Length: 251
Image 1 (cartoon, rainbow, N blue to C red):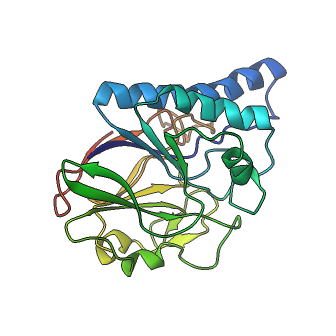
Image 2 (cartoon, helix red, strand yellow):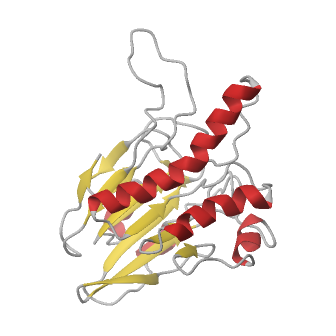
């Protein structure tokens, strides 16, 4: 199983502190990041793209902004796209995710708005199950990945977690809310835990990574540092040969 792991596209971000011209360019870059992810999947031979939350900047978005991103995904009809609500675009009834679902959702785009193990692929006879942990509020007091530990899947299946939040006791980043147990991948028997929320690429463990954002959204650098503060502009290519095999993650 080979897939692209991304997060925090935050499509629709206003960039209000920039000039109108600069803000327009930055907003366009958020939309074109979707196509870049599709192209990266094609180039790497991946069959699937996982976006671990904050696909959109806020819960209130215009329909054209929402559907432009979805239509770009539709164009990559040989890829399966799996989208998770994050803290910026959390799920609520009749909110943006329901609006997308009602607007002729492409067959290759799946919205994971409820927790629970769901089969997403068959990898040469090995079933692949996704265990999503969508957010229903901007901040949750509970670890929404906790259910993964007891979620049942067939013996030998690949179990891939998809979540959005902050790893407990692993430093501070972003809003430092929606805490996640750093040992969740191991305790839940996950082949891989794909995380979003922190905007830098971070390896938590062999089976747990933050992908980083495909577009940087902080433009100041610490003294004597190089590159962007959030190290944006990237995604992860993840390949898993079997349920008990260590993932091969390419940055």
